[in-house]
Image 1 (cartoon, rainbow, N blue to C red):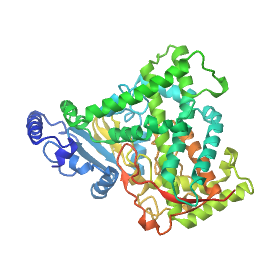
Image 2: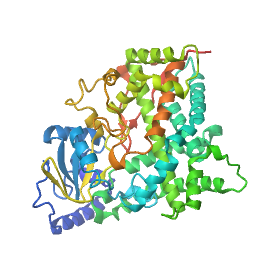
Image 3: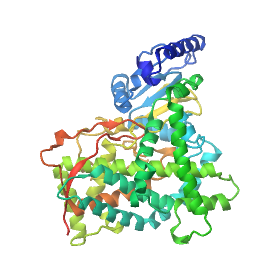
Length: 506
């Protein structure tokens, strides 16, 4: 039955056919693991290996449980894919620093090939000349500190709109999660596309939320073709291929329209406020010739920004507000800090943020307990390396469990408790130099949008702390909140956070 869950519950006849083909493949496939000292491993089943132990709903928890039994580095055979799981800061440092180049590539992921125009984005592109070029483009042109700062007016305007949206329902409750999702999407769309899509119902008409949720699910899901490469044709029978094609088509139509708008000769362009699409199209037109960007390459990079930029900001703010509301002492201390900095002023500006040390600690603690991607996007070894005396052969898939590292009792005192104070006298940060806290990864494949994401989170959280007093609805306690997560490439709460947002200023 476990196998059928991974294959999308095909008919009995088709299941038998798949089983026969798998069996044939298994019998005639020669083992490739002999001669290596591999990390410890749980017992494998014929054909599917350890897939049944990976966990279909909460793999970060399943993998942490296995790490508690087999150690901070262990080996799984996921179908026919050799896989190593890393669950400690010490070994993450070995992977991301000592052996960073050896682990700098990405494995082939079928969903990414469909959605990201044959993996020509930055997140899923394999290591090589193309990836190095687009990384340079993104760091120097698209996501530089200067470029991020140039959009401070967008963040400030969208935070003001978020405050208005949250104020309107009072004294009734408001779905905080939905409002935070709109904020994250509006900031991203204005920065990336030059306009937002939430006014006049365009957000709902485009089906943005549905598109993002489908994207998350498809990229985070367990596709049979990823674990049994010779069985990729099964995608057509399980419905996965049609979902991928449909989602790709919807994004493609959206990006075609946005690019056409930007190429319209009648469009007025402010050279001091170029959006991401403007920048990428300028590079495409006037590039150095080092490596010409195609329109599909531009679309792949836009999707990276659109999906990852929206999701990370929303998830971080949603979890931060959830933890603050169920920890009222922490909430009061964070609010007092913001009020002491602003005084009688109603509006937070970005120059206030460096003074908000406790609020920054709240954000770090949120990343520790609720990293947006609990299991970081997998890497693939380019060559044979040795970690902790164990062999990691070339072409091995590497998963780093950032969620488990953030809750490791050997690193963190009282690790399951939300306690921002732990960061006040700590030098640990989330920018890739401290391997105890890895929400954005580290090394060559670290997320290049850290500065952009944090800027969007900090100003919004500061304004929410300053503008409102927060409570759960009457009759609802912290214990009543359903904290169930939805499995995908990122993990957000399944149910939106309903709150009372009492405005402090009138």
